[in-house]
Image (cartoon, rainbow, N blue to C red):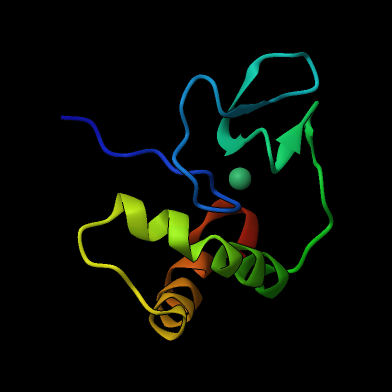
Length: 90
Ligand SMILES: [Zn+2]
């Protein structure tokens, strides 16, 4: 069993299809195509701006997890976990 790999910017699951690209066209190890293309981030966002974007997709999140979260629960969870993701460190 392998760990689920998530985009280190937005947290969506990273699959071969959803990976972003480095400047040389190779697949990104850390980021999805929504966040990262051709070696740079597609949008200049703060962590909290990204967090609010994520909350707009809570219905889709809830379809993929066992215990649905409210917006407040999801915000609290993201505020805890997002600072550990590579894009938002330091
Ligand atoms: Zn992403």
